[in-house]
Amino acid sequence: MIERIIIYILGYFFMVIGLTYLIIYLNFFTVNYQVSEYFSYVFHHLECLLFPLGLIMVILAIFIKKGGIRHD
Image (cartoon, rainbow, N blue to C red; front, side, top):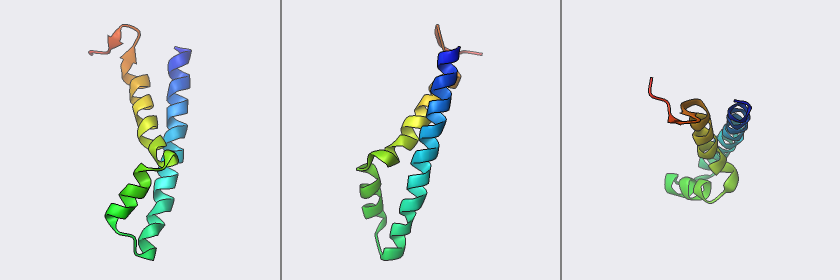
């Protein structure tokens, strides 16, 4: 149980950090970056990839139990 709580909290912090960088990098549009350039930049920087990693961790912490996926 404590492992799931730690994974959830760690995933939440990863999501916050990653989303913060994604929002900060939106300022590239003010210096005439194109959407394709923005996504290329975002996908090549580790701090932006923390958001999907954190999201996966949170989902796993919520829905995975010891015996497998929960079927309610």
